[in-house]
Image (cartoon, rainbow, N blue to C red; front, side, top):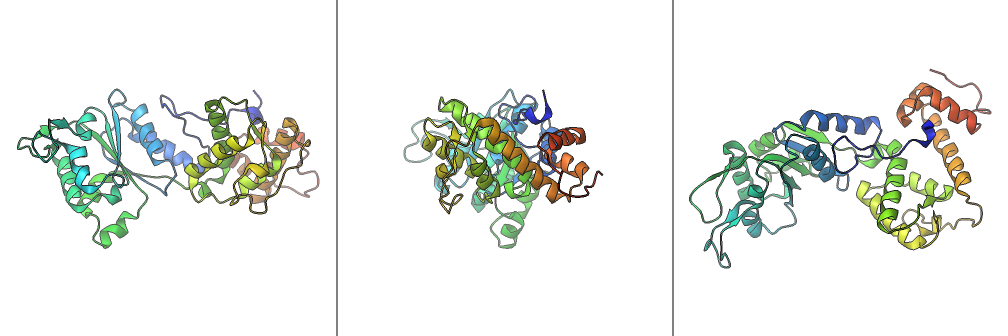
Length: 335
């Protein structure tokens, strides 16, 4: 298969969902996933909202030694504090009004598996103390119960907050912080891995087209240009939202065009020129734009450009020749 036709989604071996990205910034994340997947040490995943922290947590579980157990996730900010304790630790009959029977908590459900605490920075101080004890003693006590129960659970937590600042402000326990962050995985925002943007756009376009039972849909060069220039403050979650919206609006059209994009991405309300967007022409036009931007970024150093976009130097030469790139750019750097 030619290098410019290689598949855009790169699944991590034995992982149920694909981890999409070839950038150097994301390569470090993949390396850490591989290093921690078979360990029981707590992992803290840090990153902005929408960067895919739960996806990384699932990748650790699904590819590691605990993949035979349950992956149980809870968002600490989504459940009221007075309910969260009983959800996490369970309760016994009569512990409070409405407790008509014994009920195991979510942590017990994750026995022999992985428990994922999303938005750990939103956990209240009293529950932080209980979680710290759990990490130290490896046992829980259901609400209203005197006896303790041993649990065998691997903990992964995530936050979009600066926990060092939360500690300084007295909102997060320092001792719990050090227990949770034996290993920290920092997920880079989309703006710091721009070379992955095309992979993400194509991945979600294919994924959601299949879910909507559509034929394969392509981007017009103009739409791709707008999408590639946008800053994506909402990260991967915003990309997913935009692609789903565009696929709904395009209907039976085989192209995602400029006019289907949201106003924040297409503020000038540009409309594509119909009849000019043959798939092969659209693809060639985008490849030309993409390679020219990558080459300009690295001052036409082909070795660095090839490394960043994830192809061999020979593959880059072939693409440049095919699309007549560099013929009028003057002297170029080969190393």
